[in-house]
Image (cartoon, rainbow, N blue to C red; front, side, top):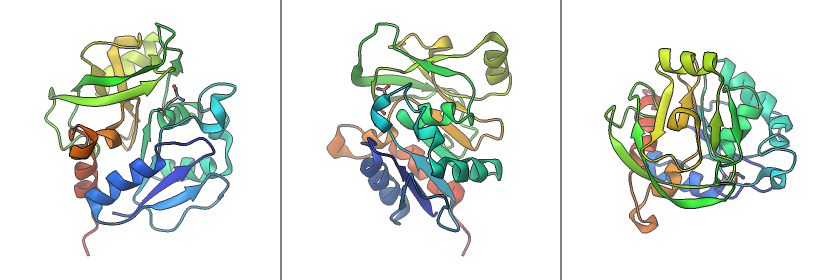
Length: 224
Ligand SMILES: NC(=O)CC[C@H](N)C(=O)O
C-alpha cells in the first residue's frame, strides 16, 4: 500500500501517522507539503493528520481546506481513493466538503486530552474491517473542537447508510448521537476525532489503533 501524509503548518501528528502507517505496511509514506498542487503518483491512501493547521485560525481546518494540495485530495477522493482524516484532519475534510456536518467547540468549552472508549459501529469499510462491529476500543482524544453536529436529514442519512464508523461510549464533547467518526457515501473517506495513530504501539500505552492500519494495509495491498 502506497500512502501519503499531508503536512500543513501546525500539523503535529504527521510523524506519528507516518510511523503507524509504516509499521502496518512496511513502507514509508510520502510526506506531502500543503503547497504541492500535485500528489505523488500511485497513492492508495492519503492521511490528513491531527494538529493545529494554520493555528486553528478562522475555524479549525478552514484555512487548510483551501490549501493547494486539497484540490488534488478532493480529486483523489472523487476518483474513489481512500482518505483518512484524524482530528484536525477530520476538521479539514469537513471544511473541504468531503464529509458532511460541522465540528463545533466542545460542549464543556475545554480542551480534552485523555483516552476514551469507542464503539466500532460498522466493520464494513477498509478502515474498520480489522474490528468486529460492536467492539469497544480505547483511543486517545486531544481536541477543543470535536463536537460533531449534523442536521436531522444528514444524521438520518448517516444512520440509514451505515456511515457512522465510531461512537463514544461516554460522550466527552457533546457530539450529536455520540458520533466520533463518519464515512463518506462510498465508504472510502473516514473522518474521526480520536487518534488511532496514538494507540498503535505498546510504547504509546495502547494498541487498539493498530487494527485500523492493519485493516487498511490488508484492504489496499496490491496484488504484485
Ligand atoms: N489534535 C488535534 O488534531 C487538535 C484538533 C484541533 N486543532 C482542535 O483542537 O480541535
